Length: 475
Ligand code: ADP
Ligand code: MG
Image 1 (tube, rainbow, N blue to C red):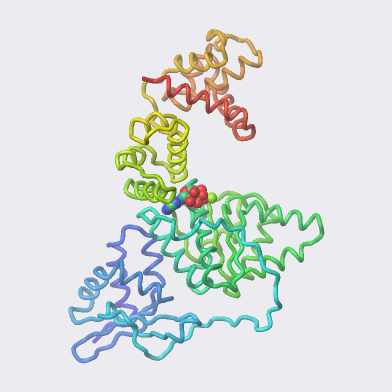
Image 2: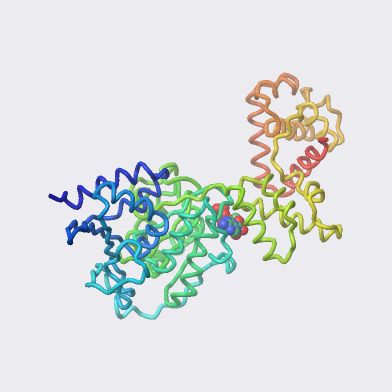
């Protein structure tokens, strides 16, 4: 007696789960698979499972072939075979491919009876709409997005969506990850691909702030219905940095409706956030749960090899010849994100042009000194005070005195800020070295400096200059 297809598949799932480290990958690739049939044919046992799209088939075959075949043999014996049924999106039907044996020799799908997916029809007589300005950066493409372990899942899903917007089960598609890791690049790459390959689709990229501002403006100008119908006319809606919807109730409500209506008629929604959805603050539960209806994928900090590949790629795009040891040097020292890698390259190029200097490791060391984030072990509070006071041409003792003269307060705050940032000392110790001040004064100074850096460019430049002198004052 054969087990039921779902019993057999359940046993397989347990093995898959044990063998796939990343639970997101497991959820993404295996949870949507449905077992549909288990049958005997001669000596063979055939298990048929249904996949949401062709992309799943390709992905599973490429990445999980070995795991799937050993699992199947374990659960159903050596004569077991797996068949995939794929739910086809409308346009695919002509080239129809239906039942695909796992890892066929040719991989060319054979024609079998069709399974139609229930794709709602587009309204036929959609009135001609004025073209939409997409707001996409032209150089944000898949072509120049370097693939690595840190972004593989997100990138592949993005490609699948770009090829079939609205028709994969990745709707919405939410990418999250820290600053400078490529979220904006990747979501815009989807938009650019759709624009280039599905010319009729209306693609719109907006930041969540822009959505919010447009909405507020629409309210003020009494043009809400225009706002709504505009957003509802979009085929691929890309919203960047949705964490900024936090706390904006009215905007969230509007977005909730836009989301529902677009989703219902299978328009593609693509979102980015700087953290996983459940950690986003101030967003209504019903919206958060919708963010997770489709696929959530993260971008991680790039590993060494990817950092090197990105540097190589960017340098060659800019037409500069970067020696391997310089690539190694940068990739080993700048680790936190890709924007900083780019910053380092720009810095090197400027340095090379200005000084008419050859790019080599020694030059890179000097040019990038202040970008390299090692926490200098030998930087002391006293040394920081000294450098800051040199900058302001002021007597160091003033920092420890009670005076509240403006320049002194400013120098004191900045020195405290760097003592906090660049040394391991506790708030209490720092306070003590500034004339026995309380730890809350240190916290306050730190915030005051950070706030002013946010809002005042001149101030920010000044602090950065002091940072440079601090770092270059080290041996
Ligand atoms: P985020 O939106 O996550 O803060 P961005 O998308 O703005 O990050 O990326 C920062 C910079 O790094 C951009 O200039 C982008 O083109 C570049 N970048 C990010 N990821 C990659 C990648 N995998 N390959 C090439 N460039 C990348
Ligand atoms: Mg961004």
